[in-house]
Length: 214
Image (cartoon, rainbow, N blue to C red; front, side, top):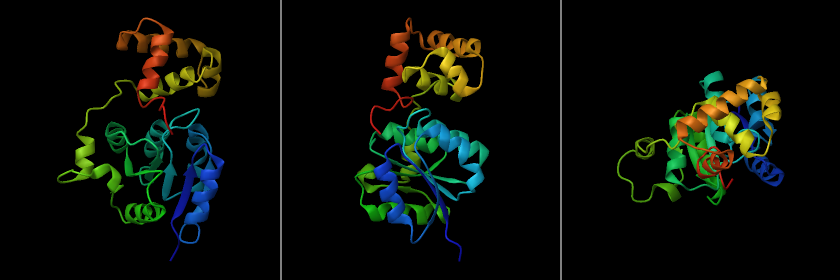
């Protein structure tokens, strides 16, 4: 029986190495990535069954990368492994296509169990997140109101701006014109009723666009 093909994405090399050692006799780790944009651009050629990814990654956070990957590879299973225990963040992850959500302080065996479960077509959430919930924990999370009224492209632009890149640098990363970046920036400000660039960055830090913790 073929081992499930797994990709790992985290901006901490030690974590990537530890996860690879943990998963590799049972699963085939076919690639590792240190930022969300590299993951998005390189995942499809590796033909993974499962992608284990962090939320807080540079260039493109895990939620945006996961949303792009599900559009490109609808059958791939997304397993989020993060320090973020905010139920709203978990809800956003499941709305955008996640199959599992675990915390980095979960027991190591949980990740193996989660991958087995999603490969079978199921869902998994660490018990650390589901205490006191009645009924389907997935529906519990999905019912939470989305914290992001922005489009995927706007969120991508905003994360890069929040990381301190100029509009010209953002345009280069996204392969669009600086004028397009400016259009997205000022459309966001108008939509969010924000008056300054500093307020826009503050909004990014408060939302899942620029997670404060990985």
